[in-house]
Length: 317
Image 1: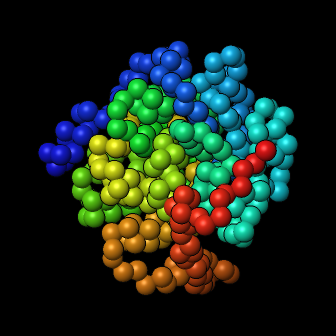
Image 2: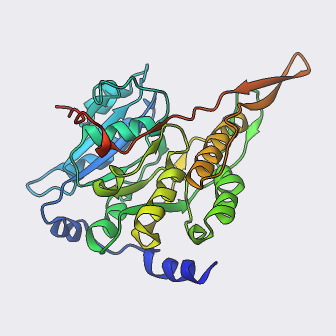
């Protein structure tokens, strides 16, 4: 790694977080904390995640002031289960109502800024299995206890989880897009970020000051976009990372990962001022023993920094 990255890694990486919930509550000093779970058809996992986080919202001096499930158009029982386990639920159509929602994880993360009022916002993916509630205080620690931190990325060990895809083939392992796409891209474009263990991880926390000041890619490019925008606007030292232990979630098939990789590449190129053709990604599938091309369009939509909206974003009751 570059010397600047080695120095950053030594100072801004917490391998064994040792702060307590009581330490964090004392360090809030009037700041509000929101936890946001972006969700789309996560009925199998959302209940346990909400139930695990809910105790942090209880008592006279809670660590978490608002626990929000931000729904992206679920058609299963995600919303009902989330509410039954104690979360507040907002639909993507409930906020910033003058803009028609578009599909994508980044879209609901961006809209969640208008649905919450936390000074610090913690994002947790809704498809985690065997969820550890300790993720939340671990991610909040550097933001509440250290000076100058605006973005905290979680990192973890990702056990191999084998699943059978629609084609009947086995999809192996986790973190493939990180190792095959994101890390090589960062090495080529922003080598000072080589010390980020999980640049695409869905568990991270940030200050509202940061999150409202940067654009959001509406697609799976949202995480790499936030990372690149943070270092550009606030400097490398504004980023920290914390060891969360183990993270388990469902693995996607290679076709889906290809689309994700295309979106991530486009976002990284845009953030680096480099051209992208915007061309669709062409993949190949077997139909009746023949290989047939299947093209999937790139969604280039970017939402502007929330604070720049002409109309003040509506708040969800």
